Length: 224
Image (tube, rainbow, N blue to C red; front, top):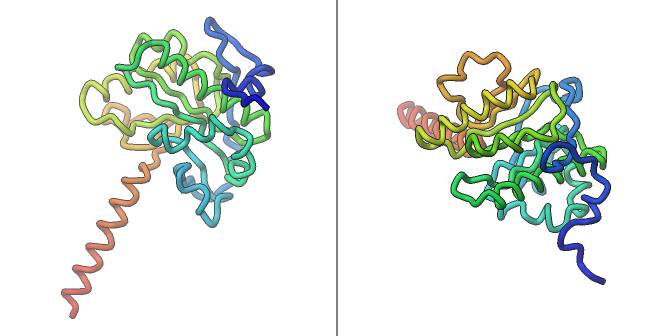
């Protein structure tokens, strides 16, 4: 049997909107979050987590770590349904990628989000962009309002931070979200934005845990 290389099965029935026929993604109602704490787990740890129903799964990872979800979309539906919610896929839109590559990655992130919603997975829309040129298509397909998610992971210099802030400002202007989950560090310019629900990145959480363990070890050594 011929393999569905282009994922026609999951794209043929999707409702599309906008200049580039981006898949339509429904907004996420805040009431659908029923976990006590907002804990986010990267997809590469999803298979081994003992309590996925208490967490949100996200894809703010190197693309190779979740490319399999695009290659075999139906295989991972049961796994993703176990989570309290899933932040949409995040295929890279690096500024130095050619426009067709950026468009393709933005499109397939939205394809997976729309398909997951059709499979009754609670999807928090992931909003992604590169530079101002991407604003022509990056925000198409999303229903306004509700809860959305973004990530500042990778904003390691002033240029990247400026692009993030520009895109964030445009996103809030066009989509008018009620709240925004931001995974990673909150830029100083957005510190007073009351819409932001900040979750440290997985590595930031690990570094904090290591620092606490090291501090505890030093304290114990003093007591001996």
